[in-house]
Image 1 (cartoon, rainbow, N blue to C red):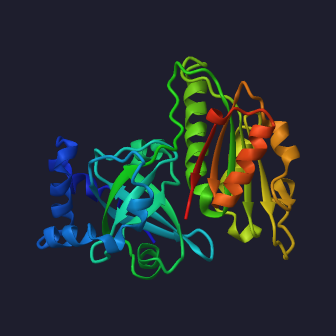
Image 2 (image 1 turned 45 degrees about the vertical axis):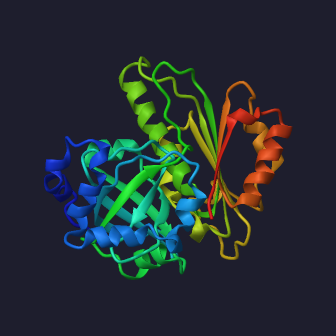
Length: 313
């Protein structure tokens, strides 16, 4: 399903010169009369689970309106939302949003799975949300429709945002399950930077390689797999990936076979991609997986400060 994504820009144009302190105004414009009571109820202790878990993380002050302008089924259990956002909305590849839903007390926390470049080009961001009974995810899967209005606030210390003057780094991206979301955003951002560098003859950004290790139960649960394979074909000298499946029963389709490995991510694969001087590793997935991979990488000589991770709940 889809709808025009440009509407939010005209609807919010009067806010485009406001400072972050105008967030309450953005919220009132989004929800209309009675929003002050809704906002107060959203700060109650009952819905603080995501906010409490991320209380020590950086987050912006501004709360911006957004409208759903597209919904697709990314898999049997994951919906991908396309949201038109306020002109002042910005984020770095890898960050997440506090997701506020009118009438839902709980605040969601979802990583962007699109690139900052898509936001600049089209004024939209994308979120991929797995079904759970948690109220925000349940609302997305059972109530949300094209035209639904929400509000979002960006946060997170986990991101990839190099400057043109930064030295080149080789990325090792390790994802488990829906932990692929922020890493896919980083992969897309890297491909945008590669195009910029190539169009400028190498004057903008020094982009190294990127290898993705992505683990899921089966190939049906591998999100964005077609796009990831396309990126590897577009930049064969820069991008590579291995899809690890732990409970695959059906035959793997031919186009994925070169990339699919049975079983968990191995130390041998990680070792082949680790250079302590050049590798920058981003991890996102279940906490036990992150702990195990982090320990393996440090055992391979990768400094702790070059291992960045986001644990999702």
